[in-house]
Each structure stands twice: as C-alpha cells, then as structure tokens.
Length: 356
Image (cartoon, rainbow, N blue to C red; front, side, top):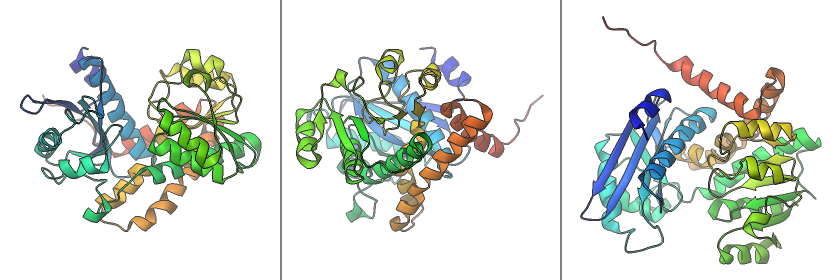
C-alpha cells in the first residue's frame, strides 16, 4: 500500500505500528478523524494473510467508527486497532501481549480509546487496562459497562423495525422471516430478539456449536454458509465479517431488507446502487450497529448506564430520517447516511490556515 498517499486522500490523521518481539506483538492503531472528540474504537485480533490486509482492515474500521459516532450524535471520533494473531491460541493471546499493547494505547495520551472487538473480550480489556486508563467496555465489577452485545443487537432490532415499517407498512416482525449470517455474541443476541418479536429464523455460522444453540433456543432453521444468501427472507442480517454484500451475493439475495450488525458490510460503494436496483432497502451498518458505541460513550462520561437503552432506541428515528432523506434526494440510503454524517463533521471543522 502507498499508505501516506492513501491516508492523505481519505483524510486519516494517524497510524501507529506496534511491535514487541519479546511477547510476539504485531499491531496497528489507526485514527481516522478526531474533529468531534477523541477516537474511540475496538481492538480486533485476527489471523490476517499479511500486513497489508491488517492495515486495510484497521483503516476501514477506523473510518467506520468516525461515521458511527457521528451518526449517533456522540462527541467522539473514530479509530481502531488490529492485533495480528490467532485469538483462540492461548500461546499467542497472552497477558503479556495484551499489556504490551496497552502501553502503546497509553502512549497516545487519550487520542485513542480502545474497547473490545472481534477476537477480544471483556477480560482482555481488563488486562489492557492494567497499563492504560484509555479503555472502556470493562467488566461491570470494575465499574465498566460489561458485555456490549445486547445493546448492539437491540439497536439493530430497532433499525429493522424502522425498515419494516417502510417496506411492509408496519414495524411488526411477527410472521416475518429473518436470515441471520453469523451467530457470535451479537448475531445470537439479535436472533433471540427477532424470535421474541415473532420472526422465523434462518441462520448460519462457521461454528457448529453456535448453530446447535440457535436450533435449541429458538428453533432456527440451519443452512450452510453459502446457502444463506439464496434463502427467501424478509430481512437479511449480516452479523459476521465485513464485505459479504458484494456483486456476487447481491445477485443471489431473495430478501427485501439488508440490516445487520457486521461492520463494513458492503464490499464497495457500488453495492449500495446494486441493492437499490433490486429494490432491497439497505440499512447503513454504522448507523444500525451503534448501540455499543452509545453504551461506551455513557461509560466514558461516567453516566448511568440505565440511560443507554432509550438512547439506543433512537436508532429507529435516525433510520427513518435516512430513508426519508434518500427518497427526497433520490440517492441510496448509504449516500444519505454519509451526507448526514459528513455535514455534521464539516460543521465542526475550523477553516484550514494557510501559512505563507
């Protein structure tokens, strides 16, 4: 990657490379924008094919966090970190590695505040917090907000209800069919909420244990990973890795709504147009999965976490506003959401000074 050129073109502020040979740490911290406040974002641990893929993921996730915080009306910017390694290998994910990473977070003096992401847990955040105060999403015993997945799933549910009202004339999900791709902590929590609302669940996951749990708990119909795109559903919920909505999969979708918890669901910007052409309503991922960020913002500000649920419920109103704006401006919902966010950020930016 021509990293400096890419960062300049896409208005990224900073990238930090973290290496500690003593503990096997190889990590990247990316900050996209701090116009609205310090950059908040997760620490992801994953086995990337190479350094370029890790760097690209960190950059994409950081920008997504900027948009997520701005869309939720928070005074926070966007950043993200990735640690290169297998999160399931206890020889790689050690306390020493996590604490070493924590020192790098601390060295940024609050420009970046971290939390859990794919491949990291609340317990991992506790280890990172041994070296830096710039951590949120800590265990409740430490005064933190604990598990973020229930609030994230609730926000996605509210967005689905807003989309259903637009598409079907009612926000009720009773009798509707939801295809859930990925049954991790958020995906399984969302499937449970959808089941409670009366929806029929079709689900898939790479881990058999997760699919068995979904079958036992709410009678989900289980399909193979590649089959999930082709099943007939009212709403398709991507809750696994990003990029699953692409030119190939869009051609196979038999649904009316795409609304899920995964980050960076669209493989590229053109996918929003392809979905619109198929008359599939797309709920921009960074808008609908902001429940965790809202909860973390309350924790960061020292507020009572009981206020998180009504705040997250407003995602319904934000989604309605985006749908209305998309229709009025004759653009996709992705473009409407981006414009809304960019207008807010731009309104807070000071004019650039020109030095002579």
